[in-house]
Length: 294
Image 1 (cartoon, rainbow, N blue to C red):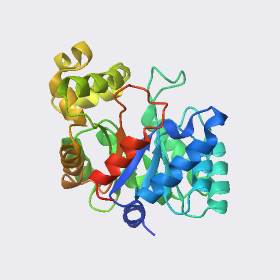
Image 2 (cartoon, rainbow, N blue to C red; image 1 turned 60 degrees about the horizontal axis):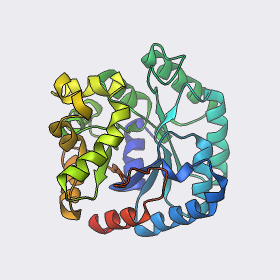
Image 3 (tube, rainbow, N blue to C red; image 1 turned 90 degrees about the vertical axis):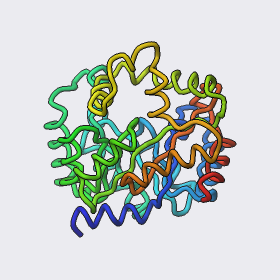
Image 4 (cartoon, rainbow, N blue to C red; image 1 turned 45 degrees about the vertical axis):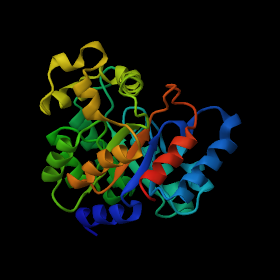
């Protein structure tokens, strides 16, 4: 199977809508039962994939065990945090136990978060070569690609791309770079809150961390934003473009704009208005599923 065919296969496997979250791999073992129940409910609600923010293969395994068919993906495993041989061994073990259930999302993280960060494109290329040598198929991995060179790598050496904190305009550009075959599965963050001030305040709490990371701000500059948009926690224009907020209908329209721009799948992250992203916002996940008519 060629890489493009692999991307098309992954698109069929995960459907149009998935859920992106950091809350399903919290380190507190006392929550294991609650997390397993939440994963099972998300599968029952109809989400096509669970994307685990800032995760490794080991975080996906319990969720795959708690569900029956839904795809579980790392979104994203940092290549600086996990050696390629270790990642490949974990992938092989999970694949043997649950064939076809896991999608390996890889990323180069950021200079401020990884001490060994240097030559990220070359490092990713080398990492993919090590995975190839260890038997991890290109069609079972995606890359957190923002810029043109990493998108080309996602096209040529993976099933496709999983960009984070992007816009429909970026999706259209990414689709042009990837071509028709590879999977394009952007993340998009939403706030189910109709009041503009409360919704934007929730979004700004989340965005504050990412405004410190040049990989994101440089990508936004390429998309036409300016340095002024990054001041004060983010301009209303930046917030309203990077986040979908409002009632269910408006949020659904914002999500579907990515599909209209060329995405195969949207990994939707919901922000709880209280800002607690470690909690399980299950009611928000239910409301989102209803809005998406899963």
